[in-house]
Each structure stands twice: as C-alpha cells, then as structure tokens.
Length: 75
Image 1: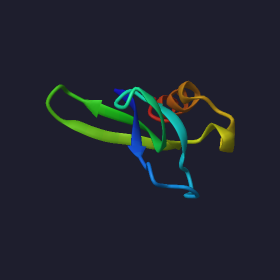
Image 2: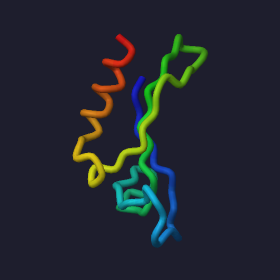
Image 3: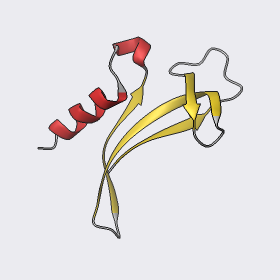
Image 4: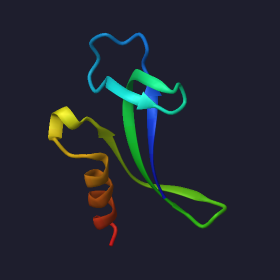
C-alpha cells in the first residue's frame, strides 16, 4: 500500500521540510510536511516498509517517482 500524508504545521514560518501542499483533510493548501509511506499489509496487520519526506524543490522528483523508487527497493 502507498499513501501520502500531510503533517500539519500551521504555525511554522521557517522550519526545515515545511512547504505548502494540498490537504484533502482541509480541502485547501496548507503549510505542512508531506510524508510518503510504503506499507505492507495482509488485511489485518500493517508494516511500514519505507518512508520519504516529500520536497520537490529539494530533489525535483514527483511523488510517483519516489513511490516507484520505494517499490523498486523491495523487488
């Protein structure tokens, strides 16, 4: 399973990794840390396999690029 999650940081003005992202929870652009997760599940248990803090300004990669790289690391 792959997922992206926003870690809200509404009061952060100059904090490392905090950028503006769309939040489905708030239905607006918010200041947050965007966390990408790769999870394994059998339907009952969930195991975190990999994670990445998404910042396209830093590395120029898309979320899909990062998800593909995470999946390739577990082939």
